[in-house]
Image (tube, rainbow, N blue to C red; front, side, top):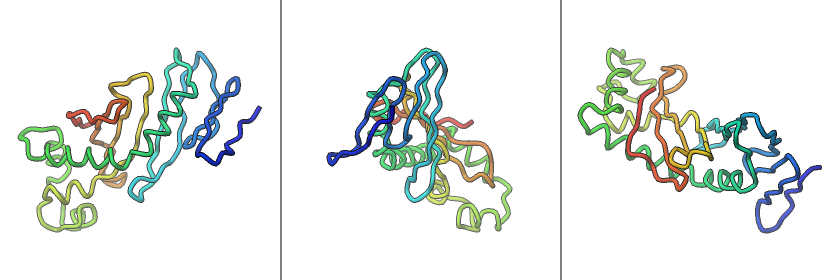
Length: 181
């Protein structure tokens, strides 16, 4: 049985037996006892980003948790801005993961690569570094309220496969620790 999204009041979330309709992820088939990873692409600050909604095998996605994920995704641009502000702050802290990430990725770059990635031929300053970071992936984990969002920032696939990882809780409060993976 298919659910209808017809409503003048906004998106409708309908659960039929083993299906939930999501504003961002579409129709989600629910199979209790198996892990679920639903993927979509979403535009954040004009850039397409892969987003995954993840449930462990012991969980069953339901209308309420899918609705909350859809609702929180409306605030993703603000969350990204908060994280970039935190990254800027961490660049000023000695021996922070963010500072180590920048040092590792910026040392020994020739002018052409610095220009292509950071928009400067000079040493990469904080502003140029933060501006070059792109949100590459978002994982949403409804069963982990303190690590509900896991956001990966990259300098680009062409540059490195390593990322800065930030997390936020189910209320959108950003964890003050950024890690490098």
